[in-house]
Image 1 (cartoon, rainbow, N blue to C red):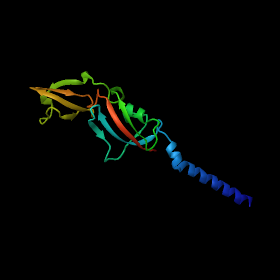
Image 2: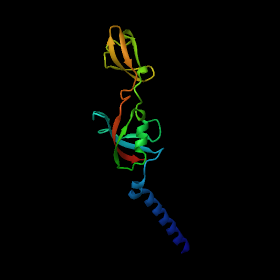
Image 3: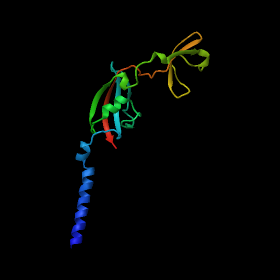
Image 4: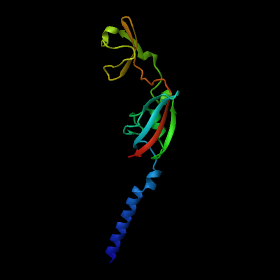
Length: 164
C-alpha cells in the first residue's frame, strides 16, 4: 500500500509540474529576455507617417533577441515585453540603420552600369549590398551605398506574438 501511495504522489507532483509550465497564467508572466527567440508583428513608419514596411499579411518576424539579426533599437524595444503586448517605439538613426554617410556616395562611369539603369534604380554590388543610382549626367553616374533608411528616425508599432 505504501508503494501505491508513493506512486500516486509522484504522479500527482509530475502533473502539477506540467500544469505549471503549460499554464496560461505562467505564460502571461514570461517576459522577453536576451537570447529568446521571438515573433513580432510590426509596422514601420517615418516621422511623417509614411509606412516603409509592415508584417501584416505575412508570417510574423522571427529573430533571436540580442543578436545582429535585427537592428539594435528593435532588440532594445522588445526587452521585457509579454506575449500579446503592443507598443510604439521611436528609434533614432544610431538605433536603426545608422547615420547617413556622405562617404558612401560616389561616382562611376555610366558605361560600367547595365544599359537599362536609370536614376532611382537599385543594384547589388559584388558584396551583396544594395546601391541606389542617385543621378546620371552625361557619362557619369552617382551611386549611393547608404541603406535607404540611413539617417532617418523610425517609428515602429510592435506586437509580441510569441516567445519560444
